[in-house]
Image (cartoon, rainbow, N blue to C red; front, side):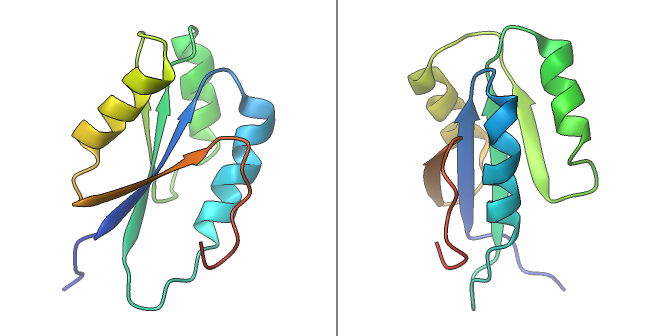
Length: 102
């Protein structure tokens, strides 16, 4: 039986698809020893179809994409906190490339 995720890495983004992929690929390469984690993207870009098209590139990965029409970083972070389903949430900027042990 797989244990549930204990933390969420949350990436909030707004029309930055040119750099978001690098951030997500780095998150997918994490190698925590005893931690199961999930990745959540909260996208509040104005074009929902463009946001969904970008998310399709990661279909089949453990990344969960959420789109919201309301812009603003604090709104996106609040949605991430509400939807993450874990006790711990770590926010990372969409232009950050994390180390493999982040």
